[in-house]
Amino acid sequence: MNTLLFLGPPIVISVLLSIILGYFGNHILSRGIIFIDIAVAQVAALGTMIGLLVGFGEESLGLEMTSYFFTIVVIGIFALTKFADQKVPQEAYIGIIYCLGLGLALLLAERISGGSNFISKTITGNILWTTWKDVWISLLLFSLIGAIHVFFQKRFQSISLNKSENSSINRTRLYDMLFYMTFGIVIVKAVPIGGIFLIFILLIAPAVSVTLFTNNWRKRLIGSWIIGSTGSVTGILLSYSLNISNGPAIVCLLGSLAVILTLWVILRKRTVSV
Image 1 (cartoon, rainbow, N blue to C red):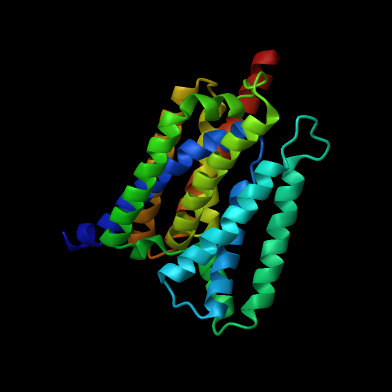
Image 2: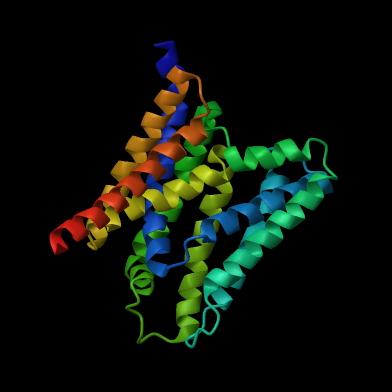
């Protein structure tokens, strides 16, 4: 019973993260901007480091707002670099921003006491020490963002599935800005809990695993939620029972599943063709 009480918050938060990131992951996968999550997460971590240098305390509102500010600036760049005649893929800008954010973070780490430990924490996270307060705050925030996406569901989905040809590029940018802003808010909240690698794998691996078998949007969402939640809970239980790191355990489970399913689909197609 004590074990269940201790693991309750991590299990619930992992399910919440699986749901919200599974939704965004299908959009990101359809848009072909796979590494935007890592870039945004790195900028969020950079904003936190800048806030620490300015003098804000850890887990303070000022520190969180600093992280949000830098994240929104980068989100605006993503939205503005989308053109009707796209000469440079957005993935190029995403890669540049990620490298820039990481480079600046490494330089700033030299100026912060325990800076290297902070960078390590942003990469691996520590979902096992999630509290019920974190759960309720995340539930409220994710519910508000979910309501926004339900209201603009058709707009966001048409852009992700390239069905917005009749809309002007400026109007598309406006909806893109709203989409990326809500996405950035989720990432800023999720990274301190799960770390960059876990957030990325929850965003992409479940969506990839389901999209291998269906293009139906509803089935992709439901399948992503099931795979992400099951993998996260299983990873937490395994990490606790085997005394191993929780984040890497979940990453290895979901990442291995995506790779295995991909290989299975490839081998199956080759067998059928022969």
